[in-house]
Image 1 (cartoon, chains in turn cyan, orange):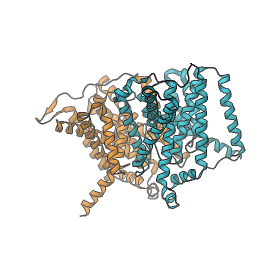
Image 2: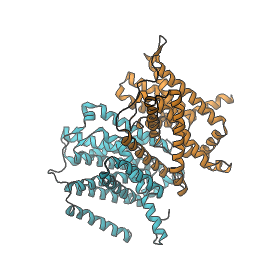
Image 3: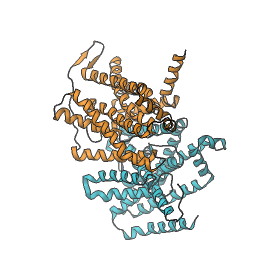
Image 4: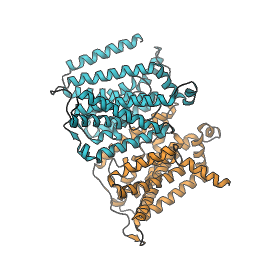
Length: 313
Length: 296
């Protein structure tokens, strides 16, 4: 680990620990919790798409599957919550692997639409299976993780999940597996001839990525305590994608920066009422037109201009 | 009953073909997914609503004028928003997809602010229906069928027979090769983006009585466009035409024999099933068959 990375690590840890002490505002904490959840999702979407090049436009489906599995288990069978969350993650991971099997044979952009179609099917099933999911009414009365009204325990849990997720992600990328992932993205045929089991790598990474999405969905369910089939909708997927691409696809810091920035900016424009989303959209267009490689790419470019090193493009 | 559903599916399917052809064209040429595509549909729908029911213009004026307006909007979008991104970076596929995502949000909210969230629309363009005994078709659906079939034929001829169409095909086959043969890439991009928007204007006008118009109506056609593009093979025009018809028929069948709620779900499941056996879509297989027949 480089020294600059170590400094950033310690600094962000301190910031996380200190924030709830100084900001008692529940709404602000809520936004930060959402930011952490979305950062986690954007990170692992980035693992699948940015690092491995397996485009997934139905990522919200795994979020929804994790949320519904965990919520239903805790309501009907009253399992302990950590077990529910783990099972939610596992079910999302297994379904993710199963869906990746047909995708292995397809060309790049086809997987995008197969996953999108799968998310739509999942949403329609969740909407019409009213006996189990209560349909559009949404599932409510999901047990909360912590008793009491305070958001601070949720805050610490969300950020420790994000932290653990980021560390695991970093470890995956730096390991032999990470090299295999990048090789598969750059040239699959060359990777296979060099002895990389491309299909196994794809299945494994899809499994990991969808497992994390499921866990995050389960956390969301036990945090908000009501869930609707809207959780499966393409809107969430697009939000996750936007965050990841806005910060910089295929970079480590990009999705995290993008997630927090977009969540906070989205709320920051709330005083503009009806014009809020309009400005949000214009901002996305503006930033992409100015920095096509994402914000992190832009920072790297500035550093290179100033002779401070920074990664080559 | 079965024949009735088949005819209904066929008619709506030809409209899906039009939607799909416009989308797949842009994918083939620029290798991007245009997320603002549904919003072009929405703009055309609003335009048709204003022109037809507020200004009382006849349909044969509304349809071509909307196509021209959308052609302008599409070409302008390409020139003002996408061209600068292309000039700034070499690997521009992903940034351009992002720009179209942003454009989608902007256009939806613009429509919401200006027009409000209410559902608008006209009940029908044409009243009455044709009763053939074994099947009943309303005149409006016949009109939809006629317009889309003519449009598909014209588009097909435009691509296969004109110089501009051939240059589009060349770009979609190999960007570098096209550049080396002296094709003006920028011009092809701008005109084909305009053409794609003009194509989706037709469903925008014609389907307005069926789907109504509201700010997020674009979600419906873009899902169909995704499905058709995938089914037909990415960037494959013939495949998209057949894919649209298949999607239309499978949707109506699903809604008649399974459940109207599950309509989209069954159609998508059918699509994934086809893709398991034909991973590249049906378009390439169609071309292979065509070649076999021709060379025999």
